[in-house]
Amino acid sequence: MRVPDAGDDGFESVSPETVGLDPNAVRDAVEFHLTTGTPPEQVAYDFSNQEPWDESEGELGYTLGPMPDRRGGPAGVILKEGSLVAEWGDTRRVDHSFSVAKSMLSLVAGVAWDRGLFDLDDRVADSEGHAADDGYTSEQNAPITWRHLLQQTSEWEGTLFDRPDSIDRNRGVGKTDGPGKGEHRELEAPGTHWEYNDVRINRLALSLLRLWAKPLPRVLAHEVLDPAGATRSWEWHGYHNSDVAVDGRTMKSVSGGGHWGGGFWGSTRDLARAGHLLLNEGRWGDKRLLSREWVEMATEPCTENPNYGFLLWLNTDNALWPSAPESAYAMLGHGQNVVWVDPDHDLVVVLRWLALADDYADREDMPNQDHFFARLLDGV
Image (cartoon, rainbow, N blue to C red; front, side):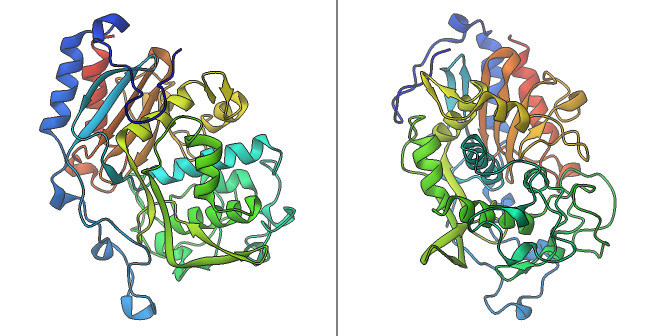
């Protein structure tokens, strides 16, 4: 399977017919996105009205990190067998991708695992070097493993960068019922309860920073995105108060989303490269950037949530995308930022700013995604 050449102009455009796609189906899918794009006013960069948080309790107020002043309109690409079949909108524009940042952490963790820096079932508290800081000394946190952090089953307890883990307890992402976000819930043993919790994701990011002893954006650039031909237009931010000391040097710990600012900002085309790397099971041309074993493990269902792997959303039992193969998986972010991988059909799809369905407003596994994929896959 070919890979795009380096840079924004490195994508080879081909007609759908040359790679076995019905052009009418491609056109129908693209038109669906363009007519169901998310209006700018529906993507709030200020989450304060959704948070059970009193600004007066935090010295830094609500926002901890930078946020874009504005965003672009609907945009997307379809790659088939590594070639550009369709694109729409401004695919070079750098936009916030929200929780797609979590999947970037999975890539960084994968490179670390490939190098033998940790074993999945090692306790983080037992890690060598700087990874085992005082965040894992309590009775609740001491048993936490790297696998727990990557699957969002850690049940880590504490406050990090002025945010307590309790702020995201009972968060509705990936759930259809239960208590409301931020409501009290007794913690369970690590590894026994799945919860989408940005404080714990930031805890993982900090642990990976200490493990690598270098800023994670540098790791992502040097080990993954640069070799995959991405531009350097992307940015990965932390918070105003997320500077930490490692080896006597001050480094910024990045955030795994845009909940309180920061996060990963990138172009549609650069996100497509990350998706294509996963489709190729970690290989980029003649270079091995991630092991096939890591990609396979990252896309295995978590026991506590069969639709979640290592910071990737899965289609186990066709639950998220009924129209797509069960093997499909995705990076997902707020505002409907989607990097979708379909190994069965050699497809990568990036969608920016797909509208939400009203009855799924608190979830990132939205039915409008399946409407797009159904239209596209009609032409396979």
